[in-house]
Length: 415
Image 1: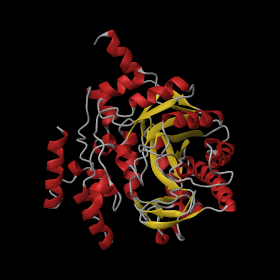
Image 2: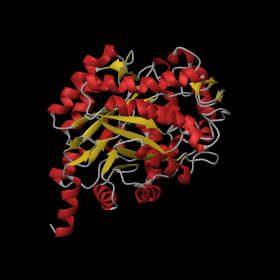
Image 3: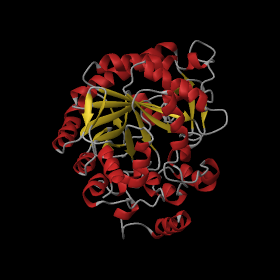
């Protein structure tokens, strides 16, 4: 093994810190939505998955999207942070710690990405309108509600501490509520929360002030933020950098640099083509199923996949910021991971790679594995919106013929 390769290996597999915590290596399981909840509470499946990722060598694993309030839920099989689930969450964090990894949980509010039956009310957002992608009417938030939700972020951090988490990841991207205030596409307010970027950042500042106060000196605070919204009329890189700099000023310990808008450019987040057949197969609402079948390919434009697809934009943020940065997006191979770390990013996040191979980190370290088996057909993404996430390669012989044909077609298209 030559010296250059040894040095790269040392970077990937050496400890590093995020605020008050230290990870055993530079890898983090990204907050890819698992859909493994029952009545908005953890299940045995969620426990088993995160324990397997921790045992697989990850530095820290992140439980995905936990809503800070009932009205912030986007799915019925999603976590809702509240005292009643502290005990089962503690069981998960204890298992993660027993395997030598750190535990994080992503906290957020979906805003307009919900329905009355899930949220318990008409979905709320920065502004009143109609969300075609849910689809639902949306009500702009009153000022008293804005303050209540900002406080709820702090309360959720305290709940996360009680449950044994080492870190929280605040979701300020992808077109969820904080992002809906930040983006001119969804924020059409004419008060102190709308208009200029400084005004649009006001709600984010309120949330972060509550988060940082609750986190104190013993919990790490990570924020996922958009570099770009991924479409004309949304946030572009110049505003994205200003938002990131404000998050640095507010005390965030690290940022996850992402992009895309679930209600406008969902595949900008994950790249590739959405498997419409797989997605609609699991849908229970008949009119939504046939609506997506008919119009899905027009509503969900594809964005070509390539490894490290966010890297060019992320390098602009690396130049503008001093705090630790976590790169996410298109990491399925060791050479690309090492390339990202060589560019000055302190950590890397992976999602689909660890759905495909929960032990990918150990296999890179102990077996010299260069690439995981993910083929980017996005079946896991199509499935998780209706039932729990799963890689199609783990379901051999269980998939209906229509889905198997779609996966085979997309597999050939990605070659």
